[in-house]
Length: 268
Image (cartoon, rainbow, N blue to C red; front, side, top):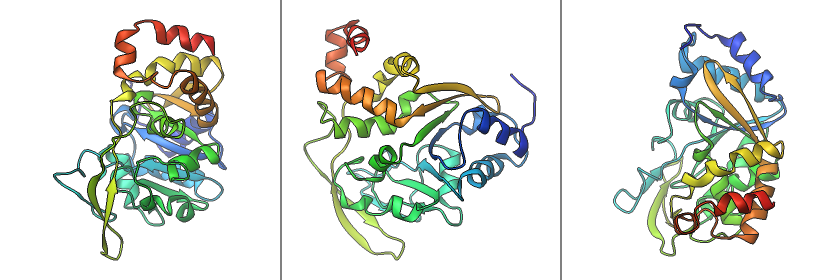
């Protein structure tokens, strides 16, 4: 393990080496621990990402709450419900000029150009990553996704691709009776469908194919092994896969047809 202490300048250099541009829309999945020792800790990491993108680009973190907002605990508060996906998203959503979308289970937080418009209206959908939600807007903006020290199995954007491609066994039929509380304290009922099937366990199978089509780049951010995906290239590839094999990411399909997934991917 490296004993290097990373700082603002070194992390900025790493960010540029990964091909991130100041005008990009960038979604970040992250493990702060994987980055190693950093001067000023998590705040330094967020400063690097924020300063680099806030004027010309858009920085987005998932602030998911699907494990702590459910039928037993049905209320999501825009200001107070803690994100379940690590330290960086939780600190980021509380920063000045950051906007968080008002969705009970799959909110995102954004900073930068058009951030407020980007998150707007998420509460109007009864599924986590519906067409024209902020998750779909990532595709419209040809965003990149950066995985800092974590696997592409945590790629929430691909859950969205499955929704838009109408893949099998993606959403629950029943709606949970969830509530949202906005920044002014107004509480509203939002019946919501859930992602089902734990499809993300199979997302890693497409990683070598993303690399083959030039939609995946590897590098480092601090100590962390880091992957950057081109969302447009990945979405087009997965849509093509799901059009032909709508059950491709389902447990039954993978268990009943061992090895067949690799054959199908090789066809595309």
